[in-house]
Image (cartoon, rainbow, N blue to C red; front, side, top):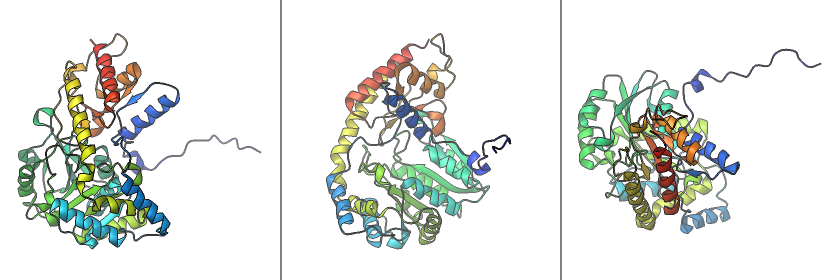
Length: 405
């Protein structure tokens, strides 16, 4: 006999209710669903290079398969892979990590999550310049930490000042997280700027830094500075990197950290209970990537520079936008507050989220609300697409905004 008891949906945990879905992934999912319905969607929502993984990296994966490197790896990664990463840190960043201070993870996102879980207790404050990558604040909330945002505006190239940093730090501050080159703004901190931050950080014992350098090679201003290379900061810093962006390996899911051994051990312990070691074939592919001279991706970087210049020119032609010229990554983060309060006669735009939905509905172009990155006045545009697609997307954005008065 069928039960007459009313069926109620299950309740997810309070922990899960603390966090939001990734806005970038949500917009990408919506774009795919609309495209599957036959709509002519142009999506600039995901931060993913539109290039293929270089052949020499794919060949390393094929050889790994042929050599049957298909069994459980060590939780923190194969020793030869960690040695290759240590050499990369020394060659490119002036950082001397031992293989025991390296942890290979399933993407840089897991590497960051491991570090946050390893260091942050409930009630600890975690400072982050805002705008910031969408997952930083959500991961902090998952462990019961308190995100503390330092607001940086387009007028200052989306960079925070030493005074702002000092004012944000107190006795409860445990960690600082930042990315350079930055997702979502493309801003790059110079060594001099990081030295000013380091002098403040070193005043407080037991204050640590996660330096997210995943866009390291996509830097149009020169070599990316690593805060861990500044005197006194090595023992205070977790340096995060990976192969997804510079080597067009987003689907391979390999990120890594360099950190003092006690932190690396803690991250490995955390990872051992969540996923264990990262994919073996992908690790061998990543080894080939980090062992290569960074110049192997210089052609791709120049394409991104050309696209940046094109999009900068086209965005300047749209009335009301406030933009900077990003020095790295592959994003623009325009301030669109000029359009708040405007209407097309049917929809009134109240915020950036409304504007993103309006542009998707009116012109089938997808971008991501800046609210997810800590700035409700902006939206993120990825220019990791061909010039033809970018020209079409900018035309659509301009057309949508022209309908608002």
